[in-house]
Length: 155
Image (cartoon, rainbow, N blue to C red; front, side, top):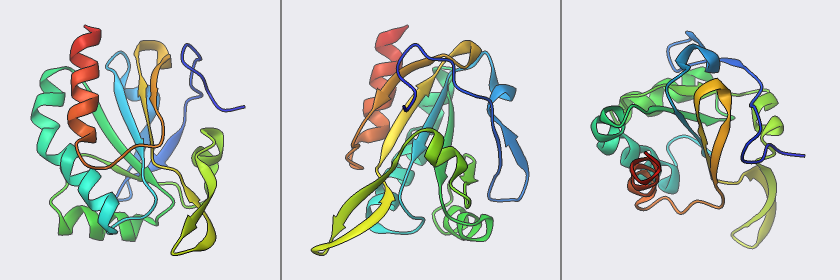
């Protein structure tokens, strides 16, 4: 069963776009926005990632850390980050271990054909790795501002 609000999230370490290990617990007690996206440098993912890029100063001011995560390789994450000047870590979950833990791998339909991929989902993780809120089936447009509004309202 995927984590639910109130659960303690298992600690994990994944490499970022530069190949550096990033561990979830290293950000404690700051809240972490962990957003899962299907594939680097695709239209919806670019809109969502650039939204977080554009809102990063406001999110940092609110005390929040932003981490993007997908099944892409470190190399693909690096290319995506550089192409769009993304200013936060993109984590490479190439073996899908963390995606499976959060249960974001779903059957979807693309161009009329069934495919298996990440269902765009964002998790807000608070102090002690406690899951505070889940944003399911995210729409890329305006999502970063939606997260920011939630974080500000929760203070």
